[in-house]
Amino acid sequence: MADTQTVDITQQVTSQIPITSPSQKNPKRVAAGKAGAEKKRQAREEQNKKLAEADDIIAKERLRKAEEEAKKAEAAVVDPPVEMEAPVATPVAESQTLTTTQWLSIASIIVSLAAIYYKREEIKGTIAKIKLAKAPAPVALNEPVLTVPKKKGIRSMD
Image 1 (cartoon, one colour):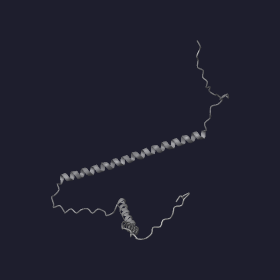
Image 2 (image 1 turned 30 degrees about the vertical axis):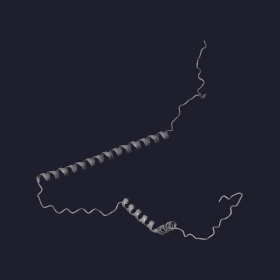
Image 3 (image 1 turned 90 degrees about the horizontal axis):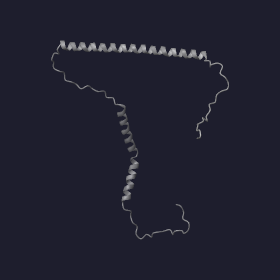
Image 4 (image 1 turned 30 degrees about the horizontal axis):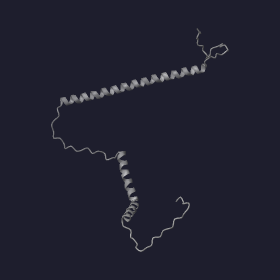
């Protein structure tokens, strides 16, 4: 039997020059990288401190509001409200300012009306043409109909 062995055709190219020394790192670059990492670490720590301070402030504000609500609730329980005639409720006057969307709607309506006003002459002319087309044309009697004799040969592309 034939011996079937697979032979690896691809060969790896290796350098014939022996490596005598490992590649040296640039000490200035290494120092710059360490300095940059240290600055990032300090900035991160500073940011974490500021976040902790902000959380403390928020917690104190919530506590203060809760204490105020508790005092109001306590005052409401201690002093029952005296029944008085309720004043006539006047509706709160809302501000009369319009939103951007409302202003744009008003502007589009005005532009539409202006366009119709500007084109009214064109509209009148179109309506007049339609009326003329519907009206029967006066027929002239006893008028000879003139026809041009057709040319024989090559016709024009008109």
